[in-house]
Length: 281
Image 1 (cartoon, rainbow, N blue to C red):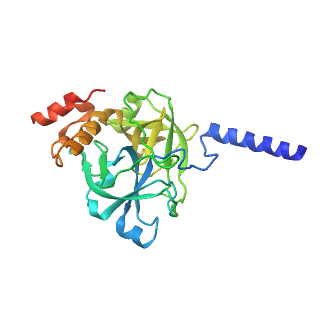
Image 2: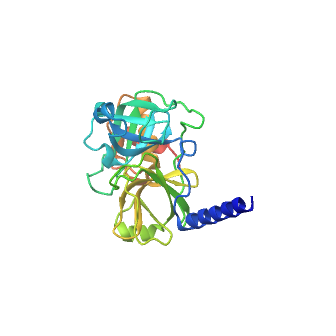
Image 3: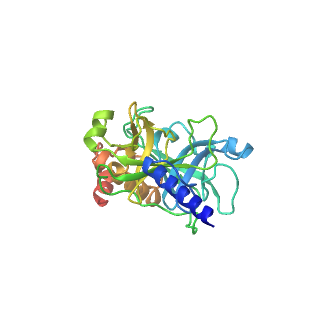
């Protein structure tokens, strides 16, 4: 018994040390992140489960996922599916939902391989009702993330030689807005850094950044230095709300993409102006 107690104590100390360093000390489970989904290619998935992984996608509303713009650029809805209800890349648990895509909305100002406006929405053909410990929605961030806020990145490690079956959780801290701008020379982005690490170690496009239990960012790239770089959800909150409103209230709107960062308007069309004014922070 004494030996067992000593062993448990040592294991606990190791876990505390790993957590301080920002490392993963436990498996990431769907119960913790029921809003974590994946965008996959239909053809590959129909042959081997898990082989069609493209990007991460985050469930924020019934039938609505947020991802990065690069993940849906040039793709057709009929060629893609979204998987939710499991964090496993392979396997078919009872809670899994494999969803057809009705529509994908890319921000109208996004240019492929550029950081600016790198955000998109995926609208599924079927409902995504909450299931306890399996499927749920995460609210989008409506406030600026203060510097040095503890946040979480989740991903499957697409840069590795072999895609992980279970996602990895990485602890990061948010960088200040000025620091992020100096690093990226772009607005509408959110940067994070890893404690006592000189290089970033995450590369799953479209995966979420969670800060204060809200969706704060969507991963787009690793900087040349120690930063991870995300599309800042706060900067695009009005675009997201407006796109959702128009999708469910009208027939496939064509003009919401022209709304810019912070909900400002780049188009004189009245309908976009009305929608942008309608949504508040």
